[in-house]
Image 1 (cartoon, rainbow, N blue to C red):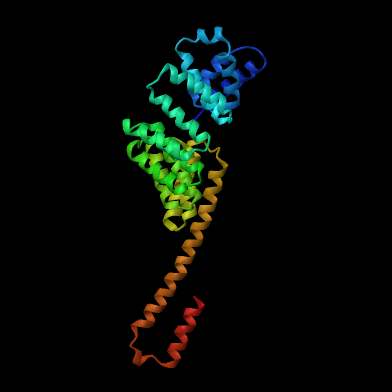
Image 2 (image 1 turned 30 degrees about the vertical axis):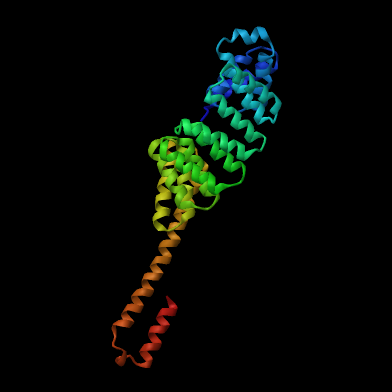
Length: 294
């Protein structure tokens, strides 16, 4: 996740470049480092460097990294001709590169050629089954086609190999929540909390899921995680404060309903302890009246 300081620095550089103050390369490097996708700006600033032979040659080996960055931005902006040209330059420079092969697969995705893209990724994964980017591209491709069940399947396969990928766990949790599969979402947030216990966002999301599931035990646990969210944020999370109020109210209602149910059960058990042959009509009417009252 990008911190406020980093985002401020990126915005400052963006304003500087837009106002003619230079710093396009610094902006592109920072955007790549932070993994921030601002395709319009990246495409604009990147092409301004690549189209200037003097600036391009000054980059040295970083020139090829910029070609890749601009190709991805061009695909995001649906400037497929620009992306194709960048990939063509990279393929000429690195004819056997699997990394360029991934870009070619992404270009097929951008064109909507899902079958061809899958064939390209399958071929690449045979050579390197542990390629994270290919696994992630398959998830993205399934989501783009609206095939959520396939996206879940690919994410689960990915997490069997790369269990420490927090972004993947979070994405899977959000998909489960969107499908109202709250127990599975809760498991994902538990994994996130175990790996990053000081991130309040995960505590809050886990508490929301438990509150939605309901039940006394889940509500009590949700209340604890809302409290931990407040503790981690220094009492500044309004949603967590409201969550504690809602949990307290819901717990009270559940306990009240449970007390009434217990009293009903006790009344029934006392009635059942008497032999049937000794129950008079008057006793039967009194017991039935007690059940109706409770």
